[in-house]
Every structure is written in C-alpha cells, then in structure tokens.
Amino acid sequence: MSVNPVRPVLWEIDRVRLIDQNRLPQECTWVEINRSDEMANAITTMIVRGAPAIGVAAAYGMYLGAREVEADSPTEFIRGMEKIATKLKATRPTAVNLFWAIDKMMEVVKAQPGNLPGILAAAKQINADDIRTCEAIGDHGVAALPKTPGKLRLLTHCNAGALATAGYGTALGVVRSAWRDGRLERLYADETRPRLQGAKLTTWECVQEGIPVTLLSDNMAGHCMVKGMIDAVVVGADRITANGDAANKIGTYSLALVAQAHNVPFFVAAPLSTIDFSLANGSLIEIEERDTKEVSHVGATVICPKGVEFFNPAFDVTPARLIAGIITEFGTFAPADLIQLKDQA
Ligand code: MRU
Image (cartoon, rainbow, N blue to C red):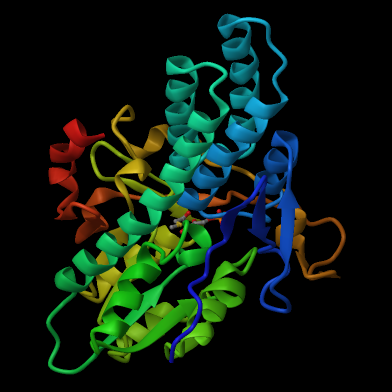
C-alpha cells in the first residue's frame, strides 16, 4: 500500500503548518503558525510533541522570531534572538533536542545576524536532516534486532514515530524498516497513560500504513512476555546521558525491568541530537511535571473521588544496565560505548 508519508512539521511559503496531534486520531487537522509565541504555545500544549519534532518546530520558531526582531545593529539583533531562544526553551524541559536545535539556530544567528534567508535555510536543514537520520536509525535498527526463526513481534511505548520527528520516526522507524523488509509480524503498542500517545498516535501511524498493530494497556507487557509474545522492545528517548541512561515517556523504566526479567532485549532508538554528553548520568535530567488533570481525567471524565492527590511526571529514566543497544544514525551502540560518538556531537 502506498501512502503519503506523515510530516508533522511543514514549512509552507511563509509559515509553518503543524499536524494538531491533540486531535488525532479523530481528525487529522493542521494548525498554522506565523509567530514565535504561537510556536512556543504549540510546543507547550503538545500540538507538536516528540523530542526531534519539537526540535524541528523550535528551529522554525527561531526563524519566525527572527522576522519579529526589530534591530538597528547586529548586536541588537542577536540580543533580540536570545530572548526568542529563551522563550522557546522554556516550553518543555526534558527533551534535549529542543535545546540542541535552538542552540544550533543561535550559532547561525550569531554568524550572520539579520540574514533571514540564511536563518530559514538552517531551520529547513534541521528538518531535512532529521528525516534522513530517522531512516538511517530504522535501517540500523533492523540489523540489530534479534534473528528469530519467524517474523518479529515488537513492543513499543509512547509514540516515537513520524509524528514525533520530522518524519519516519526513531523506534517506529525501526518498526517501519522491519515491515518494509518483511521481518515484522506485528507491533504491540502500549497505550501510554496519561496522555495515550501509544493508543492515539502510534496505532494511527500503523493503521495509515497497514502495519499490523495490537493495542495493549500499560499493564499487559509482563503477561505478554510470559506468554512468549514479544521478541524485542524498541522505544525512543527524550534525552540520553553520557553513560547511556535514557529518559523517555513515563512507564518506559517499568517496561525495561519487565523485559529484563523475561530476557527480552530492550532497545532505545534515538538520533545523536538526543544525546546529552554534558550530563554524566540520568539522575541529572530534569523531568517535566505536567498538569495533574492528565492523571485525574480520561478525556472529560474524572476517574477518582474528590480528596485524591496526584503526581504527573511525564518521563522516567531507564538505567543503561537495562538497555541492550542504543540505535543511532551511526549504528547500534552498547550504552557504555556511546561515548565514542562524542566527537560527532
Ligand atoms: O511527551 P511527549 O509525547 O513529547 O513524549 C514523547 C516521547 O517520550 C517519545 O518517546 C520521545 O520523545 C522520542 S520521539 C522520537
């Protein structure tokens, strides 16, 4: 089946168009973004989400900001852009791709202050590079997956797909490449409470492309592994530290523990832009806490009595010792060997 590839962030003539991920899977609609503060709001409210995708969106946000800055000198222009960068960086704290992309854009701004076409070209480059990077991750991932007698049954958590990147996806990129190569029997997708990215987004991407997908609630993985239904787990990451610890959507750590208990290999798929060599280990990663309504409600319905308290960390950290391999655009690395990539960063 030939389908149009999913591209959640698009540059169109003079503005950005974002797929409104809060409305999927009921409807696939687009939001137009003309200003940097609209982009900051789209990232905060998760119209656009997923570590690489928010990096790409923020890069365009920097260009939109460059159009807004009124400056009489290069120094004033840079000062104005620093304010835009600060605003965009304040949207979400955990995914390092956001900071990586904004810093990259700031380098261009400082090298050629006021050169709007140059700044737009840099954002477009980050966008295009991310798609190629994800395709490479997908292909390296297929090579790293276990060589089973039959086709592979993979399990993923959250959405690390085309929607979470510029296109193709990281963990879901591995799934896509395995499907393309005839090596995939089925994907099992965790629903991923509280925001249900697995149920709403990962299954949507699979259905678009005819990839067989089974939705699990978050507490089913252990049972499925006992029953021998899962050959490997592949997830994405929001930030990986120098020692190979990986922050990803809340629930990933528990999944990694269950996988270890059943000798199911647990892979993390992520681009170099997700690796933060400045942090020694995962305990140093800032974990975003979101509105507790995400926990107390499902949709518009409250699911608990009055008087209950809530806790809503959006991410957790899987320690390196639980990770069989980190799949990057440069190949698959044992967590301890990740440091070999430091010079490329
Ligand atoms: O809160 P979200 O939906 O932005 O979280 C997304 C994830 O945790 C993804 O797994 C991660 O960003 C990797 S995306 C390729």
